[in-house]
Image 1 (tube, protein in one colour):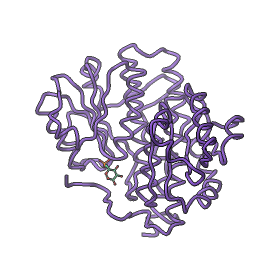
Image 2 (image 1 turned 90 degrees about the vertical axis):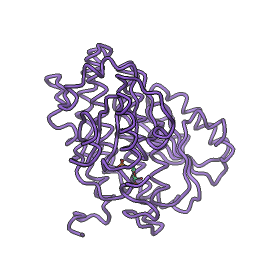
Image 3 (image 1 turned 30 degrees about the vertical axis):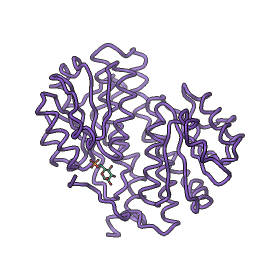
Image 4 (image 1 turned 120 degrees about the horizontal axis):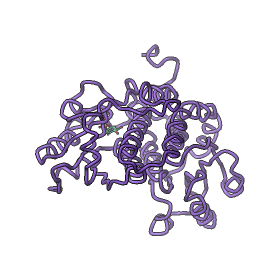
Length: 369
Ligand code: G6P
């Protein structure tokens, strides 16, 4: 087993550090910014159906559902198609309205999640086209779908999903851009910029990972916290959810992810000098709004850890700790901003003596409902 861990203490850490490579693998042969080429083989046959889809329904569970939320922002912004993101378990028992020609995208690392599989069968029986985004080749979900794209992240052993998430986001991002291009809803400038930026993501992840010592240091200071809040807006909102989920899963610290603007409708009541609040506050279109959310937390003595864009001078004066990450296109930011949160939960869990690769009560793939 120690050989399989490749010198890392845990599979999860190995998989976090593999992301420059796995993200690259997800794009290999699919993106070429020099030629302007972007293709997903599995999508070709169904692209026309997708173009004409009146809406897209994305289904998944756990971390895969979070990847679906990121995709919702991308598909709506660039491809201008209405998107709903559903927990597979809720969707299948809700008697959902599915019209012929609706497109369902099912996301699953394992390709074996029972609820997702059952939701696919239901949607298929009502005439929807099902597209799968899975990691495990030949698993049940890819076999049940009409078409799909593999994420090519390689085997993920740690129960808490890390590299599978970034690979899902990459593939869904590519799908969104392909669809937008085919529909003519994306400008040539945005198209080119996104392709160029996609290709830089692996080296930017590498840069974030090289800062792991700082994240380990911060983890040590907060390892005994009983609660954590994760706040983000826009593209970083699903990242806040994912950051909270990671921490809960492996460290057993209660954590909630929230859209930062919703804080005033509830979570703000929890803030006192013992509440760590992780803001994902990169320079994007909601930057000023999130800066005022940080001020609101500071005013109530909350302890702010902020994930910011490199050289952010403003937030560094307000937050107790900042974790800098490189700049990228706003729509691609989740691929970078999730990395420090994965490391934070990993280090905290290790420091608390938890079994990070096999947390209690959790399974890598849930094949029962
Ligand atoms: C389990 C795993 C999670 C995963 C979820 C969905 O709960 O512990 O890490 O996100 O299932 O799994 P899937 O294989 O469908 O992505």
